[in-house]
Length: 303
Image (cartoon, rainbow, N blue to C red; front, side, top):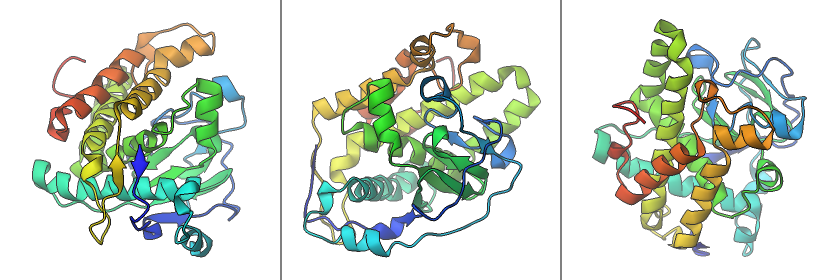
């Protein structure tokens, strides 16, 4: 993977709340939540088995909307060495993902894309879905239409789950923006209604939602080298097969079965909420192979 050093990093697509003292909720972890307040994400509420307790999302507190100060991030990402900085690279990944969906959503689904900011936070944050702390992993909150991530998550991903490749990072973000697209299309809300009507299928429906987000991430990856900044500068110079292999490796290592095995817990498919390693690999690969988000119909049949 090679980013274009001439591409402009648009920090306006990020809300930098690091160090703002948002505070983390210590309530019961709510992987899918309920109704429009439920968070959806990559490995929500499973890292507890690997990194210990002390995390949660308290959906009873009704998150307060706060915003950060992007001044230092904007200055850093305007410097000549911007692409050496983790937060600037991740901001550029966000720029690419949203540039893709600005074109793909109207072309493939006939609907205009509505941008969503990514919130960088440290330790804890207030959200429209309640208070959260870093242990929940990266997530999307449908109640405020924002993606949330503590960038230290990537170190946890590498150290605790063995997903060390650089391309794991844009895959994580592309997955979360897949949830934003589901929110815009009404898929997430429809899935929540189905869960309420048929609680026995709640986990299976959650798996379908997560696998679709993986597939959307694959579709972005296929088209990422075609994305550009507002001045028309390409954001990526290249994405290699090794990069795609890193994304697939990450998808496999955060499968429900893989995490259960790593935590020395029984593997029970009926308890899966995000999909098995093989399913996550399969659906990311399908999105990447076709390059078409319309191919990501996980709800249309068996998985």
